[in-house]
Image 1 (cartoon, rainbow, N blue to C red):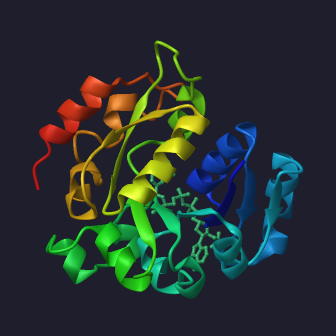
Image 2 (image 1 turned 30 degrees about the vertical axis):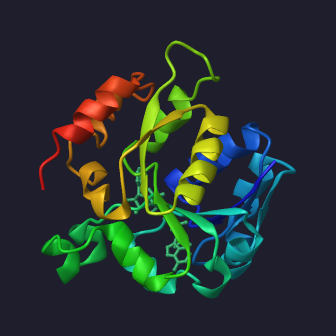
Length: 222
Ligand SMILES: NC(=O)c1ccc[n+]([C@@H]2O[C@H](COP(=O)([O-])OP(=O)(O)OC[C@H]3O[C@@H](n4cnc5c(N)ncnc54)[C@H](OP(=O)(O)O)[C@@H]3O)[C@@H](O)[C@H]2O)c1
């Protein structure tokens, strides 16, 4: 069992937390408004879930999932994340986040921007390319013929191994998509983002195998 801290517990954070609890992990939820606003969500997830401040969620997690709007990156607590495996699910959208010059110019990936705020974390990009409803509905046990794949990108082999083990426990397999600097290949609007798992209008989604994920990553253009 792993304790998974969540910085952000909205649509995607809650979905990952649900799969994590179902897989036997403990989860610590947090958001910007305080733990009392997550009491219902934590209660619904059951005894393996509780709500805390974002600092406590960062400190308490063996793995910590940052799942917030990119404009909230400056508020992610850096000190408790030093040396930890951290998953970045976040996608940049100027309509929500405002314009960020390094992301508009594509001189940085959004994960590299996050790393500037949490420089001592071991950051892995994951889950950013799948709609949260598809994530919930496409989870399958290991060995299932229709198990889906998710790309991960990061600079630490240790952190990638930990994230792979975590994702596999949730019901997915992974494709190694390279370093954080390569994570633009799975960013918003790329071939691997969203569409392989089916249209948002079909909440069930469709399973996506390893070859399809590798092919989609390979055809991305910046
Ligand atoms: N939804 C999806 O299907 C999906 C799929 C792939 C990737 N993503 C990406 O994943 C990220 C999260 O998406 P979402 O759909 O879950 O967003 P969401 O439903 O709007 O939830 C955002 C969460 O972040 C929290 N938050 C905001 N500022 C914070 C701060 N300073 N400290 C701690 N928590 C903070 C919010 O808390 P409050 O409500 O208290 O402000 C909320 O819990 C985004 O970058 C999004 O682009 C989403």
